Length: 436
Image (cartoon, rainbow, N blue to C red; front, side, top):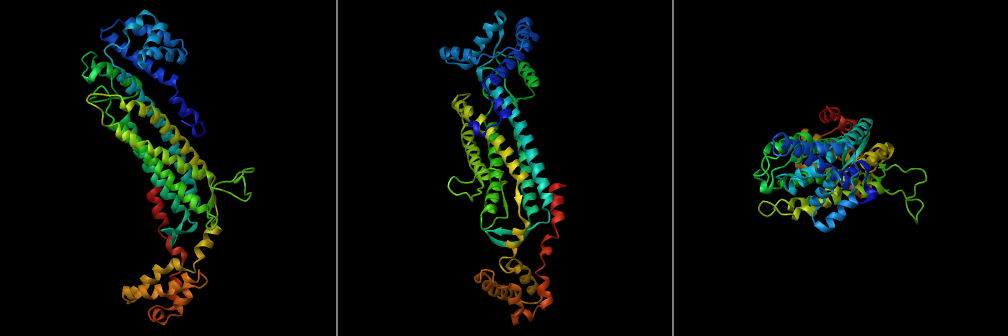
């Protein structure tokens, strides 16, 4: 985790003290149910909860010192708790194994992280929707292969992003549901030494569902799906970031990141206004996607368990969620304050002498009885003259002067095909599909 790209609420989920608090709750809830079942004295759970009610500070350095000797983190924690609680603590962890604690804790952490990420997505969607409505009919050029294609609106560009992030949200809801599972099944997952009702009790108390079958560990296909979902969200972030970076290029300059008073763009060139936020988002997206591969590789463990996944998850759990939380918040800020230049969009639309209307003329010629091959040839030979003049010539004027074209289409017919508003007649329908 890099503090520069971290926010406190998400970071707090992964702090050692937060992790130990979840460990305690799992152990105490399990002991509570064991007491109800008569496996351990009810006084054991009472002693644990009475100590917990004092809101004790978790002494992380003390636990670390014990672990330095035991070389086992769960045993170190149990030993420290026993030192605080006293004799009744010996009934903790009855019939359980370390994975019961570790995997269930990770499920709690990832579920809580998901809740923050879902709230982030809601804020991003709200910002995109507001700006999309603002620019619903702002004309701009659509590009394919980076080349002028046909007119769109800037609102449509944003509506596409909204639809994409709405899908991301749906995927994250499903990923959260899949990851929020509890396993208290004991060694090799057979419940030989712990009653399944203990698992049900702990799951209910922690807001999880019971893992149908665990092999001492919760199956890692769940985790692979979760981190793959984060990777897809990161890809969507980068798609928007790259679009903004392209639009901010000097020769395009249709939109740009907000440049605050006192901000500096370059240590050498005082004129620079660089898209540093979206470039940064591109880099963060690469990192978040990178965490998906080790999560996929964690699926294949030896037999009923090994710990080759453990070290991986200690990295990717915090890093992926913390980085994505930061990236979503940053993108929301970029969208919210994005500077949009409709006049420059119109200037770029007009730059190539009306070439963006070539398809309408092609279709009109075919409808007037010209073969498609001949229609394409007629429009293209005039369009290439405009292209080679770098927009100095007008496609409409050239077409009006082409006898083969005017044999099929009148000047009035041609002029009608250069109506910009024609391209936006279905914008309302598209917005209704996206926003409801």
